[in-house]
Length: 282
Length: 164
Image (tube, rainbow over all chains, first blue to last red; front, side, top):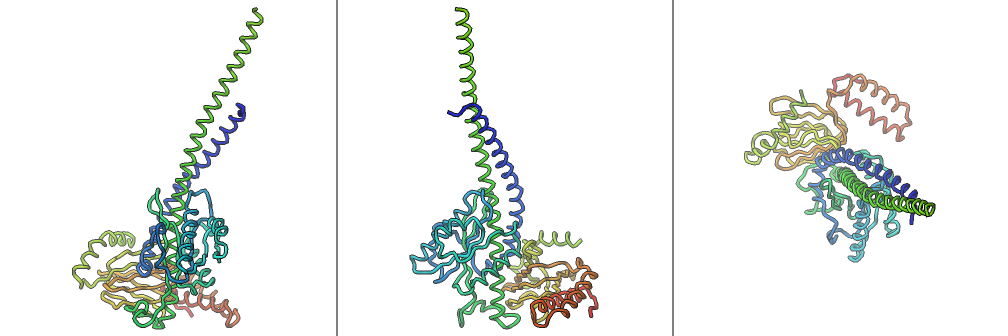
């Protein structure tokens, strides 16, 4: 059994950790405000893109049957850890999606954003992982998003039948869902011609469409980054709250053990004194 | 003053847009003007918008045909119902006019023309011109400097500066 001194040290270090986790929780709560605000403007900004691509769907339980033959998955994970399950949920979603696509005879490659998804994906599916972008400045902005979009295009995003962004969609401070959105290139002729109802300016439609696609991708990435950042922050807040609570419980049980050990020591000492005294009397 | 005006506009938006749906010919269009970091107008009822298209300026009014336009750096003017107008300098982006008199304008960056400093524009223009002259013809630097010159010239025009 641990000595009184050892238990005391353990209590002190647990208290220190509790201080760290509870201040991390407070920092996350403050940062979440900013992330929520940026998410709201990003949603408004992205309205036009969502109108063209359709609303994002939930990964959990999805069959991915609507995806075309060859897709590029872009999972968005965080660079920093200590944020609960955000990144492992995304990694699991990606694994699930790749498996389902393979069983449907389709191909999928992965271009990963964020450091924390790299571990599980590199272990699980190294041959699909084509690109990984890490160490993004936080909070992200539109410039970050356009840098990511041009990296993706440079990596041949245009050769795929669709780009699928997978990210954590923030719902409220306690919940988030893993979502995916499909961005298909503007292609097709005749009746399938994209944006048939619209005139184009300049009237070189194919060029404008190429630019529009790039801008659309940037806008969607921007929105996903902001949504992911808010989810990450809320998840970190939750995780740190739980950690602080657990630390509190641990401190309580350690204190109990410490007091018992102390009591046992005092009792032993008392017995020694009493028996010493009675030996002298006798 | 403009800020308070904008607040007034956004506060009245829901009622006005609802009226759109019933009576088609109010002569107003609904404008969404968004930057990544800021929402400037969200379904605001305006009379028209003059957009700096890549091939030249054009004006969008109510019941305009659906059009997708790539924007260049230039002046974007919003005309309100009461004859007032607001001028922005946009850095590019896209303007999408949909059916039903709704226009989405999405720009990576835009500033009010009043917030531009003409002295700095003048200075940047000269610097960019010098850089363009110094850069090797056909190089990436020359192209970048040319863009810089164009943008600063457009900014100068928006401010009414006479740039050589």
